[in-house]
Length: 223
Image 1: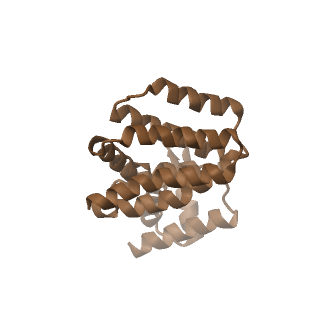
Image 2: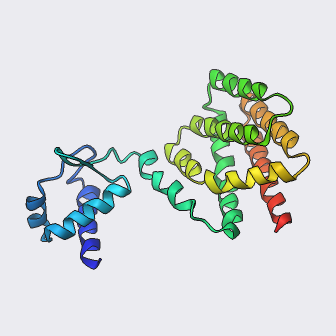
Image 3: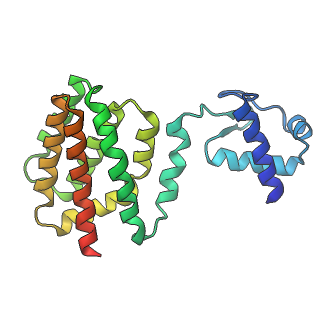
């Protein structure tokens, strides 16, 4: 394992230094192993590990390439890892969401296009006054994803997307057990949307904070 770790660090060093850039093809296995002073086995294990976290792309019969290193691609692993969270850490995930999502919502206020606001409004209208919990939570995910994407920060978008698994389950459970959860969520969504239409970043931030905190507060009361 230590030898594989060394191989990973050496390949990482080549990418970070710019010796290998996004889209570049790695030298042949024998050449790269000799250049880095590694065995071919340890190099092979390192390539396998780096391909799992989307740093490298192994193309059968064509070679191994550095991926685009796009944040959305690299942070895919985050959503996989957080799915293994323990139930007693959900509050911690919600706390992170409460820090990041209001900031993204405030950023979106000055950037989001009228057409995007109209699409979000139409999405809320399509739900009707009494959607099922499942419909509401699915819409909730799309609503916030659309706003975060409008912030223009792909890293923030990918981070919040990766954190959605644990918090989604909390939102479903809240919807099934709290009497006014559906109406409150719809009200908060409308308030966020109104603040975005007014281009009021601070109001958008405040309503997004209230929205996430209401799930967090409900969950604390059930523990």
